[in-house]
Structure formats: C-alpha cells, structure tokens
Image (tube, helix red, strand yellow):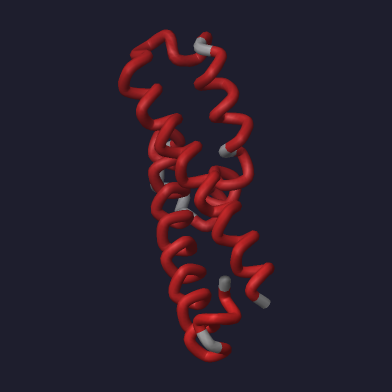
Length: 98
C-alpha cells in the first residue's frame, strides 16, 4: 500500500511540476511558444492530464484554460494522496514508513 501511495504521489508531483513549467514558459515565450522545443516537450508530458481535464470540464471552458484546470486537478489529487499516505503511516506506525 505504501509503495502504491509513493508511486501515485511521485506521478502527481511530476505532473504538477511539468504543468507549472508549461505555465511559466507560456508567460515567458509569448506568441512564439509553439515553436519552443521545451514548451512542446511540456505539452507532450502533460497530455494525459490535459486530456482528463478536457473530459471532466464543461464545454464552456476554453482550450487555453485547460492546463490550469489540469493543474488544479493534479494539486487536489496530490493533497489527497499525501493525506492518505499520512493516515496510512500513522495507522501502521511511523517506524514502518521509512
């Protein structure tokens, strides 16, 4: 159980950092962001999260807002997994969680 929670937390952490990196490059690159190699790499890494966000969100959400929605989803899931990990560690004993 602890291994599953650690893997889930790691995947969400990577996804959150990649979404933040894409947002930072969105601001810094301006209109030429589509030709930026690193922005394209972040788009590929974030494709699963943005697909889930597009599926969950209503049609009124614009396409340029989907990465922000994906970041919010990843952040909520990361907090939920972290709280589940804390609860699991408290239930089995802190010594066994290391």
